[in-house]
Amino acid sequence: MDTLIQQLINGLVLGSVYALVALGYTMVYGILQLINFAHGDVLMIGAMVSLTVLGIIKAVAPSTPLVLQLVIATVVAVPVCMLIAAAIERIAYRPLRNSPRLAPLITAIGVSIILQTLAMIIWSPNPRVYPDLLPTTPFEIGGALLAPKQLLILVVATLSMAGLLLLVNKTRLGRAMRAVSENPRIANLMGVNP
Image 1: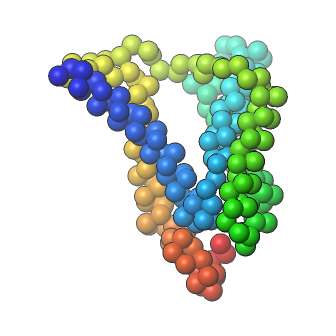
Image 2: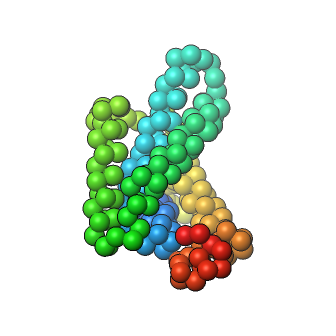
C-alpha cells in the first residue's frame, strides 16, 4: 500500500509539471494556431540565465542568502525569457501568419534548434545542477515520502493553474484571448488585435 501511495504522489508531481507545459502549448496554439516547439527551449534559456546570475552573485557577494539570490536570479531571468519570446514571435512567427500551415511548423522546429545550439555555445552542453533552496529531508504522509521540493511543485502548479483559470475566465484580457481562439476574424472586427 505504501508503494501505491508513493507512486500516486510521484505521478501527481510529474503530472503537475506536464500539465503546466501542456497549458503553455495550449494557450499558444489556441490563440496563434501554431505549435511552438521553442516553448521549452525558452524555459531552458531562462534556467541557464538564472543559473549564471546565481554564479555571478556567489562570486561577487557570497554571503547573500540563497533565497535572495534566487529572487534576484528570477527577476533577471523572467524579463530575458519575455524578450526572447517576443523576439521569436516578431521575427519568426508573425511574418508567417498567413502562410501555409507547414511553414510555421518548420520555423518553430528551426527556432528550437537555434536556441539549443546557442545555449550549448554559451553555457556548454554539460549538465548543471540548480542549488537546493529547500531542505532535502522528506516527510512522511500515509507511509509514503514527500520531499519538500515535490510539495513546492504541487503548490506552485496548483496556484499557476488557478491563476490562469482566473485570468482566462474573469479578466478582459482573458475574454480577448478566448475571442481570438474562437474566431480571430470576428475578434479583430470587435477591436481585438490577434
